[in-house]
Image (cartoon, rainbow, N blue to C red; front, side):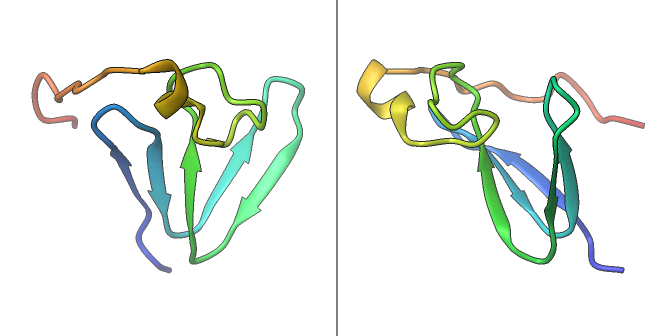
Length: 71
């Protein structure tokens, strides 16, 4: 099975690479197989949970870094 990685971009979305199942608040499922998707982090996308680039228009800023190793 292919590995899945999630990378938060500075001032932008989470990039999800690899197989994943995204489930929204209503329980709608979005299957992702072997491609890259961008998930909204700014909260203003009109295509939530996916990024539509609105973070650029609203000046979203975030350079979060992990506090430590998970696991």
